[in-house]
Length: 146
Image (cartoon, rainbow, N blue to C red; front, side, top):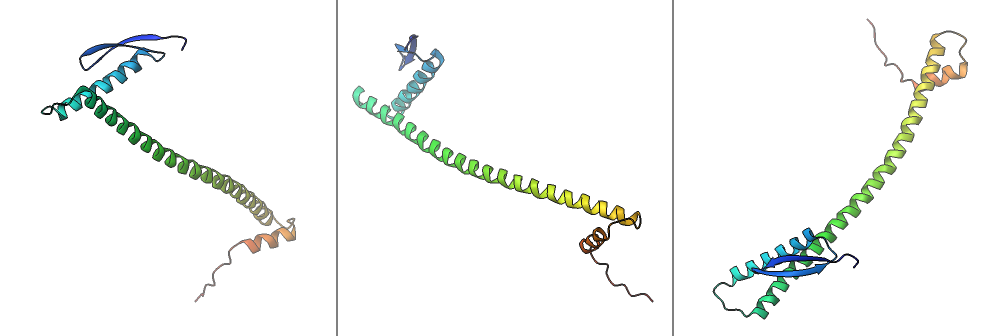
């Protein structure tokens, strides 16, 4: 704790000086939270006379409840994050595979185009390329003419 901050806060209508290495804004937020819990407790028990010790215990239990509920939410969010991270990894792997397949299909398309151009441009085309081209091309439907 190199830089100790002295922060005056108001809790329960009383000014209290806190010492901390945290920033003043953070300490004020903590004090405001505790003050709110104290006010809630006074509202809930306005007709009952509860000694200060018991009120402090109730406030501590209330704050601990908030803390544990926040931990549970955090754990649930971490599980969701883990699932999303796993799904993202799988999607990235699928993307790589699909890109490779697309490249392969583009190469096949280019090869087929070249073979088709050679076939169209005349007899100098390699006979094997023509046969390969014809095997890859869908067969025409039989049409009956009148």
